[in-house]
Length: 132
Length: 152
Image (cartoon, rainbow over the protein chains, first blue to last red):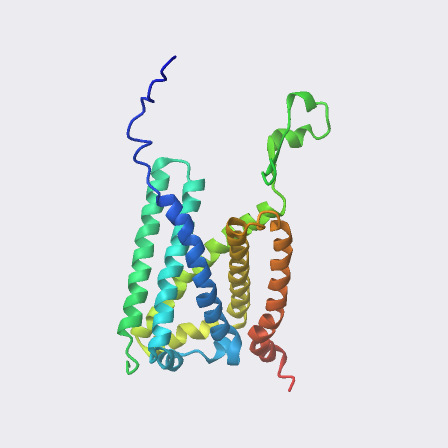
């Protein structure tokens, strides 16, 4: 009877993370939630009751007076930025062939996503209807 | 293997006498994924377009923290006929991305999904048209009335 030697490669195979599986799952779960949040947002803002023509500062003030729309917009901001950011990460990984190109494009992407999420969150929480 | 994208490899050496040799040389291999490939391409294109719009949209909305005048003036540009037309494109892109995303989820998780993926493509195309027709009507109503005069 012959004994088959254990594979010599170490580390690499043992330390594989499930990050890409969770990223794949996140795209599907966030996608379902975003269908309601984003299509609802577009329906209200662009189609119903005069659509975009009726939007102004007073309209925004009226909506953000309600915690319901604040939570709606906050959830939409975070989920859409993470969903879109993860999608762009996949596209960069697919098409940017040089290591350094991938590194810099993804760095730019992550900085942009953090900036936009932070700015949007700040605006929702610190909105002042009596400004100006 | 069922469901695998078909790849046609063209042997350049044996087809040089052929009229299509020039085409074969320049393309080498030709990917023929059919509807499944095009829905995937469109999912990427619409996703990237919507992501870049979202970036701009958070910036313009942030002007509510600057002053009502600043916000109202940037929102005024959203009401112009050309940007209004771009909004129709945005809604169309988001709606496609949502419907096709749902189709991808059904292919991944529903036992009959992979077998019915082609039929589901035509279902989402039909739903897209049915939603977009009244959607375009209400989105462009004001712009059309501004340019051509009110009909009522």
